Length: 262
Image 1: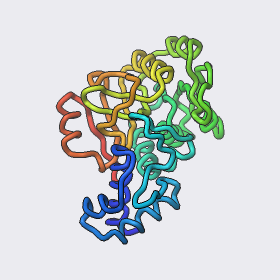
Image 2: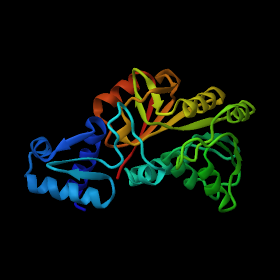
Image 3: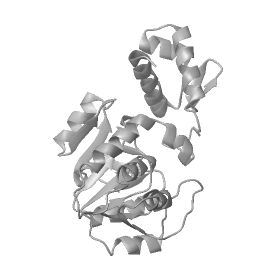
């Protein structure tokens, strides 16, 4: 895919994340291109299971139109901004030194962090994500502890509830890597499920450093359950699609921004 076309496809997804749906005419006007080019972009994104084309427009695959709801299976979410998430995961792994104890919350981007840690033996990992436990058990690598708890949502792999919270309180973490649904200056890091946010909040409390791993589609987005304020976040790792004004605001509040490029 040509660089210009790929950039336009990323921006279409970014617009859909904020608006829920859009029309071919709106996109053609926004990009100052032809309706034919927009339809080709949408067809390509539909083949990747990222959007559903509608009469005269498109909507995100799995979109429910509930306010701030981003409800899709893990597999569908993993396909969105897949390359960016892989690069973010690789970058996150470079921050971790031998002998550290880290926390990984559930999520598609934190899963990429876990994949970048396979083979790292001098490391301890605490996670509430069943799939991350399986990822790290597939080869000799970090000593991994699953929190235990209840799996409430099909396809989410996240463990929540009192058992998970109690397990986390028994650890001191050098750093925690947070997967989020949204991050902005006003509300901080947020996600959809209240129970899952509670687990992430305890990990934040037990960590010396808090690192949010989020592709640029999550920037300036807000969901219903607060994990932590912007003041608690030390580092944000994202891709080069982050808007310049958002980056400036985060940095003004003391957040270190690490950008990965594609």
